[in-house]
Length: 178
Image 1 (cartoon, one colour):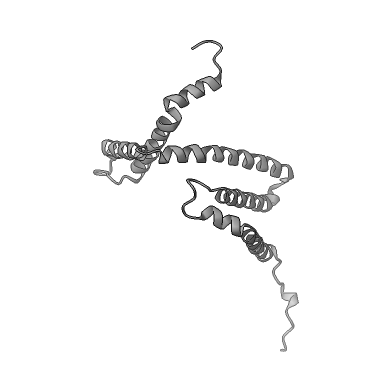
Image 2 (image 1 turned 135 degrees about the vertical axis):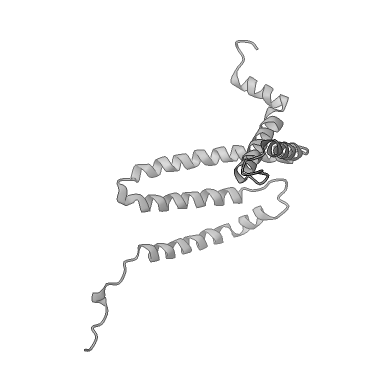
């Protein structure tokens, strides 16, 4: 390669060679399946894992999953969005950190984090329009998005009132006769 080659040129060459479409999805699938098989010890003999069997099964699953472009297209769609979602989540965490003061504020910080996580999940589901969306998920969420948001806000509000509401003390009870 020439000295003037940029990172973009290298990444484009890797893309042309199929590194992103086949090699990285294969490695990811192989590693995940192999890790699951090793951890679960499904094919263990006398308490020790059989790495050869686990590797053959992981290899077969990873290769079979790349037989059609379904996995490659899915990974090419989901991981860029995942990166954007993580970037947004990081910015929101940094902004929430500006208002995080002390240990007694941990419950509020956790609540804000859960709201952010729910918003990110809801955003991911509503933007699902993969392969023409054969299941109608995107259409359904687009149709009922605001109803879902209002319903979630009502449930969160009720939960907040129940969770943060003060308990009644004994002085509030009427005095008994006796």
